Image 1 (cartoon, rainbow, N blue to C red):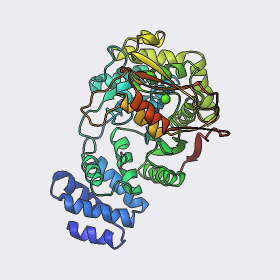
Image 2 (tube, helix red, strand yellow; image 1 turned 180 degrees about the vertical axis):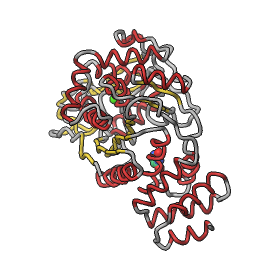
Image 3 (cartoon, protein in one colour; image 1 turned 90 degrees about the vertical axis):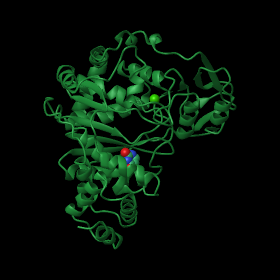
Image 4 (cartoon, protein in one colour; image 1 turned 135 degrees about the horizontal axis):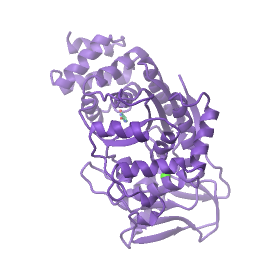
Length: 433
Ligand code: URA
Ligand code: CA
């Protein structure tokens, strides 16, 4: 087999065989195939697309390019959730203990994210002593005993994806549905998921800005999952404004605790219950979505979800007393109110721009080695569709520097108040095939 023949075949719009796709991925991973041929093929795929079989073959070739986590010693169906990312997305922190409380095993491997805030691990590390450096044996034992544990990235997962994603980033080939879908799905499958629930975000704070693009990506990923024997479904949810009220690491951790207490923001709570019910059904802990939702609501009301969270924190060295005493979390020195300049209804809180504002405060990292400030961020006091009076606080800036003029300037460009505005639809679609 020769790479040049495979490139020409795809360039001319033909369908690649599984063997040809495997040849490409193996050769690219071990260095036999140079970057220029890989980027040429990526560009051909960008223009000619791939059919369902090709996408499934590409995904599995990338899965098999490195280690695959074996979770078979964990009892039950391991359902993983993946979000395509957004601003102030606190769902994982709430979902993990919540679905664990109704018996769904959550064996989460997590990395340190780049972006507006840190990743799930950073948020959890706002708790004194909490750590994710545990052995694989302990990880499996903890999930079997308490249904939930989080481990830092171990092993060499999907090296082909790492290499190809970096190449796509500099060759104009990131924005291709078959390449994005196989990239995301390969990572979930290599991390050991039996079933996958996808939260595909749409809106200006999301990777997929339009509903149409988000739907295409969701269909592509669901089809790959189901083609390779992993029950997969997707929901498409709004990311035009930040999710919940808190954006920032410790601030989101507190928001997660409030939500597990039944006192969370309405949108975050609804999204968690929607995703959670799908996870509970896929894990075969309930027969219907209604039954699943009822179980989850009970776990919030009777305190078992919060208890699950406390045990999870303690198991991994964390001081669980923060659950009752959130003032133990890192707190920023200054709390500065951003006030409404007119009266009316909030019509726009541009998610992406508010994410950038929290990044300017130090909540996120641009490169892997950046330090982040766990205490800073933004708390929204109003959301899109809420009435506001002139002078009333729209949001609170949590900062460790006194002068936040640059942040306020950014926020001025991100917020709009009009005579009328509607609350945006939170869940646009549910996609099961
Ligand atoms: N996220 C990924 O993991 N892969 C892509 O290709 C795009 C976004
Ligand atoms: Ca939030």
